[in-house]
Amino acid sequence: MAHITINNVNKIYPDGTPAVSNLNMEIASGEFLCIIGPSGCGKSSTLRMLAGLEEVSSGQILIDGEDVSNTPARDRDIAMVFENYALYPHLTVRENISMPLVARNTPKGETKSRVADIAARLSIESQLDKKPAKLSGGQRQRVALARAMIRNPRMFIMDEPLGHLEAYLRIELRREIRALHESSGGTTMYITHDQEEAAAISDRIAIMYDGVLQQVGTFEELIDHPVNRMVAEFVGEPPISIVENGILTETGIKLGEVEFVLPVDTVRRAKKASGPFALGARPRDFQIVENDAHGLTAKIRSVQPMGEWAILLCDTAVGVLTVVSATAGAPQVESEITISPNFSRAHLFAADGNNLSVEGSLN
Image (cartoon, rainbow, N blue to C red; front, side, top):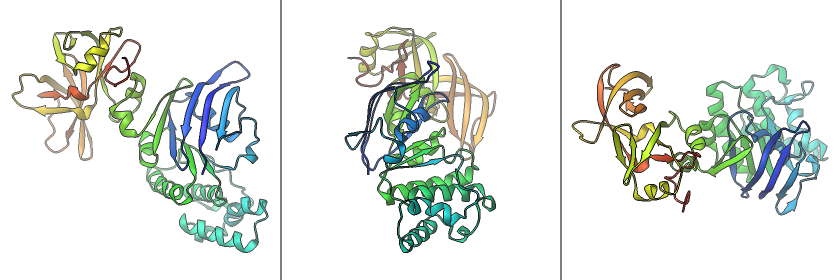
């Protein structure tokens, strides 16, 4: 296992493009950390610097307290898995998997035993004598995973390893990746564009945007306590509803002619911040009610069934809101309902995007 410390790391490419800015991060021994963010946010550059495939422009990367910023990739004891498999086409599956052990002069008997073991765990025992060209995409990725896992490195780095596979294969393989991580005891850094995948396999998730780390936490922490508007809008499906141009009052926020009461601490922090303010609420934090004097009248613009649940797009006096409802008995398009927001779970954003509903955002 490896404990990773990233101190004030910057990456600036030769053409002057800043890829990563002042990155500080801790990855605990045995932790599974996912990095997500929009394209160009710096997540792949971060991974490649940790792996030793990119130089660090400034700052330090420490593995178990040792500064490896200038250590060659081959000496970091890190196994890597990428989206494109990177298998040797002229070698069999068995030979591809055993390559790291052969390079270390591992005894043949031990190599054979370990190949058989990892192949069984990944359900590719019957493929060992085939060449990669004869395998499906899911089988090839299993071979790539087996080759990385077989030498028991202190850390695994995976860059969107499931990105181009079919949905059912991604679900199947992410379970296997998590199981392999737990059985190996190693530390894993994993990049994905799929937040559902990140939530399913990670211990914590790091959100990056424009080269800057925004927040690190569990998926539930990112949903319930996003530190800023970027995180709130990026994480969560269906996306958060945000209403603009709110005016602060003594007890909450006024949106158009409608005033909402917010928690006292949120209002206190807002009084020290700059507006205009925006109010955000998750679709699952609205409840369809009857005869509620404090509810909002909503006209259904569209209904999107998503299996057991349906997504309702609603026109209200404060703007367009997204509401989640059970598909069975969901209201019809153009009908009117009354919705009651749970504003104890709402998010109030200042003009700079800071989430004033999160304790510690402003003192």
